[in-house]
Length: 203
Image (cartoon, rainbow, N blue to C red; front, side, top):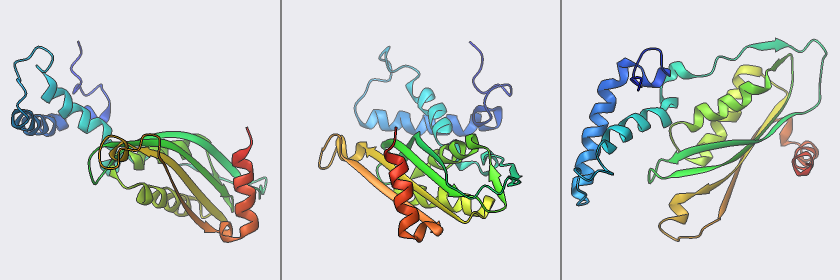
């Protein structure tokens, strides 16, 4: 099997991160011992190392250099209506309990002088999700990214997510859905917001 830290592999698993993964693995092995787990159990052998690599992967958004490169294009057609990318699947990890939360993001903007490739919108959601997060902060970060890179007439982000910290522990309410929103510019106008939510409802 190829070394996952090989420089030909994903950037978050390259050789420079080997020490980080080993350090995480060492700490996690101690946690397992505190829990009374047998590190010699065939099903647990190698688990600390796997966890070390996994943390680097799911938290790769912490590396600023991983921020997706965004090439904007002139809005030569002078398109002035809404651009929506909805049902973007994402997952993240709650910074309060380090337990996953996951769901869908709906992102829209009304172009000014520039537009952006649609895939970049999904990539920016993933980038900010790949770190310990609060859903509220994640929502704001995505809308701020749009504002900074595109200077649109307006932008809005709505996120719906299930939090395992509510489902596996605490109140233990499976299926509870948390919705957050952040908006800027012309989306503060009720008419524009209503158009956005109406379009979200359509298949």
